[in-house]
Length: 292
Image (cartoon, rainbow, N blue to C red; front, side):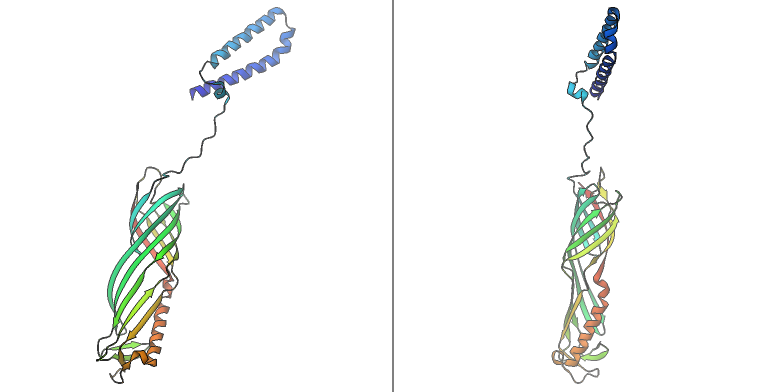
């Protein structure tokens, strides 16, 4: 820095001397010899001063060169990666993020969760199994440069499904579409149910926390809220065996009973209608992350 300052100072002195000589040149030609000698002496002194000022060791090109504009600062944390674990409504998850701009990351991860439960509805017992498997990717944008972020994304693989084995014990009554039946004692009613989702779904979340924080920060606690648009899930429900009227008589196989199949279809439609709000599946998550 000192060399550049000395070089710049010398350049200004040279410029000032040249202007002075140019301005005094006509007068110097018209003055007597003595005055001319004095002027020359003064000029020599100025030249000596210039020589002393130039004796800074800096090359002439550097003395005349103006400071260059500062180069754009590289993205902080470039080349770093943040990883984390989380608990969400999609299950237990693992994810990783890398910075792609000063205020943006790309993040991807996967989730999994298993859960078994037995429940009863309208006299039918269901042994249900919930199996969640999904992978997701997001573009995390930090509009204010802090931890708050808006994240459009996509569920790349939605393998979530719910399956159930249905059964009605012998002689037990049950109801479909308001019609009462009794399970045949010799051929009790059994069935299966399955709830499927679309494989690829758009998603959007917002929250606080940066899995790949800028600067010297390493730890983060991301918290997010949002939803996945998975369309309306469809329930498949089928039964086999025999059913009787409510008094236990007139038993026949349900596969060939038009009245039973009509009531069963009405029951499917009712359940699918109840599932309509779940076309937007809520996402709530909290996790812990570390940037390497």
